[in-house]
Structure formats: C-alpha cells, structure tokens
Image 1 (cartoon, rainbow, N blue to C red):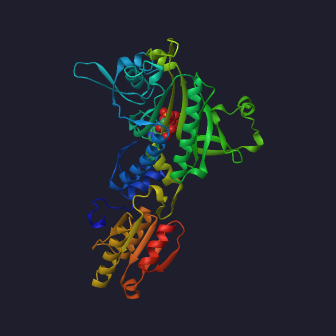
Image 2 (cartoon, protein in one colour):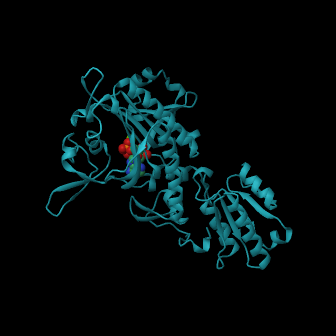
Length: 418
Ligand code: ATP
Ligand code: MG
C-alpha cells in the first residue's frame, strides 16, 4: 500500500484525556480513533492488526472443532430473566435500550443465555453433541472505569466460544483442548513468555476457572506467579487453602501486575437447566447438557501487545500481527531513487510480502523516520540518493535496531529467514 494514499495521519500528541500507553501510541500512529472514554474506532492500520489477531484465534478455534457464527447484539429481556441476570442489581454493567412500544432490550455483554436458547432448536439427541459454536462479536459493558485504553472498552470485541457436551468427561476433555489452543494463540501473537495460566474463582460449578494473564505494568489484576511451574494464582483466590490445593508454596511465588487476556470457565448445567436444554442418551433417558465458556478479547490483546512491545519511539509489532511486514521509505524524488524504490516495492510484493510504501512527496526524511518508528513495522527499508548510488538498500530491524546495506537479493533473504 502506498502511504500517500493512506488517509490516516500520525500525530505528535495523543488527546489530553488519554492516560493509557497503548491508546496514546495507537492514536498517535493512526491505528485507532477515540470516540469517547472506553469507545474506540479502528482505522485501516488498526483493523489490519485486529484482523490478524482474529485470524490467529479463528485458526486455533477451528482446529479444536469450533464453528463460527455471529449472534445479535440486541437481546431479548425475557431470555435474561430466566437466569435472573436482567436485574441491574445482579448485573451492574448492562447497557439497556427500548423499542418504540416501550419494551426493553439489552445490548449484549455476553451470550450464554441467547445461545443456550438458540441451541435448543438444534440439540435433542446424543447424536447432536458435542457442539462448539463461537463468534468474534461486539460486546457492550458499562464499565465503571475505562482508563486502560483499548484494554477495557465499554464497547469491545470478544471471541466467545461455548461448549455443549454430554457429560463431565466430554466437557473436561474439551476444556483441556481449549487450554492448549489458548496457549498456542498467546504464543502466536508474541505473548507466550509473559502469559500464565492462572487459577481464579470458579463460580458455582467448579472450584476454579482458568484465566490467561499477561504480566504487564498496566495490568489491572494482581497474580502470584510460579515461573518454574508456569502457572499463577489470582489474588482473588490466593489463600492457604488454594496453595494447598495446587501444591504451591508461598516462597516460590512472585507477585505481579497482569492483564487478563482470556479466560475459560466450566458452566456445568446452570444454563442448560434454566432453558431445559437437554438431550436423550443411548438409553432413551433425558440429561441436561454440560456447558463451558471460553473468552478472549482481541482488542485487549492488541492493547497488551502495544503495552509490552513498544519503546520511547513507538510501537514494535511482533511479525505475526504487524499491519505490514515491511515499511519502505523513499527519501527524495530523483529518478534514480524513484526507480530503485519502485523496483524494490514490486519485488517485495512479488515475494509475497505486505509492504507499506512511504512515497509521500510532502514529508521530510526526518518525518518519515519518526513515523516509521512510531508505526512499528518490523522491517524498514530505505531508498535514498545514497543507496541508489551504492546500488544497495538500507535494511533496519525495528526490534533489534540492527542496520545493514543489502542488495535486493540479500534483502529478500534476510527478511524471509528472520
Ligand atoms: P475483567 O475481569 O477484566 O473485567 P471479565 O472477567 O469480565 O474481564 P469475561 O467476561 O470473561 O471478562 O470476558 C472474556 C474476555 O474478554 C476477557 O478475558 C478479556 O480478554 C475480554 N474483555 C472483557 N472485558 C473487556 C473490556 N471491557 N474491554 C476489552 N476486552 C474485554
Ligand atoms: Mg475476570
């Protein structure tokens, strides 16, 4: 893509009321736009990153049998009354609205209730189970504090998968698979080393739920980490009893701030019983379906990546989620520079690379360098009078800061082999 055609601009300052590092950088670099506190729009660069994250999530959900669907954001009050979750004193973060005739609707903050009701039309026999529907869809939550940028939105994207199983055994075996898939997702986006499977409160059907917590200064949670065992305990369940359950000693745990990037939850039969979602087994007997829920916030994940992978100059995207693989800067407009830059732009694209080509006429070399560091694309290639004369290009790795001169062939090899 030619940067002269990209409508978004970088800016020197983030809005005054923005306190989160992730949002400040993403706004300055033109990835997101702040509509209001906790409400962000994704601009073309930001949407490219979000789509990459979503596709990594999709790949792993599909690999464990997930089937993507897309549920509505507008929700029927009566569905929520069945589980007593319509009441504002029970769920304090509802956004609600009304039809012209006065009847109330909710803007979905999660989807257990409507999905359980929907699945009644498709599940009646043991032959219909298990089932693993999931979606990547907008949720609405009237969060009290929205000071963490895109990590805590009042309107935000969630990947939510729900499992429908015949019994505890079938449920547990999927639950373990989901843990594995989550591990792969966080590793793929570059957060593997700092993300810990964390024991957290479980609700009424299992003692613990599992959160995926990424260690991060800007995190809102406190966890106690065992680096050796690669697990952690959320402060909310951190007591002598839990440590005993998990065979952990206080001395081996380190207190850290962390952000919950995902969580998985056993729901038992709470929802299936409320909606009479049952199935007939091989012996002709009726049983309630056993459920689980599995969430990830793609926007929160993107925010966490920016919090962790950034420096004083800007963002440092991991390759797997970067908006482009290569940022090609053309400095100056001589015909030699022009033809060198245009040539390498075509070559990089022919080699299958995604290239942002800074061909802007009106921007100085200093501005192009600063923008490139801010936007954070993994590889920077510079074509200038100097490189044109040398018959080589300058290649820089955003993460390591390493710079070298390379001809086109070396350049392609270097990037491809990284
Ligand atoms: P938290 O404890 O941080 O409020 P939660 O436990 O309420 O989150 P879930 O309802 O389990 O979160 O949502 C599943 C996932 O959706 C979370 O693990 C997180 O990644 C993401 N998520 C939740 N709330 C938000 C939000 N306000 N903005 C962005 N992502 C969110
Ligand atoms: Mg939580």
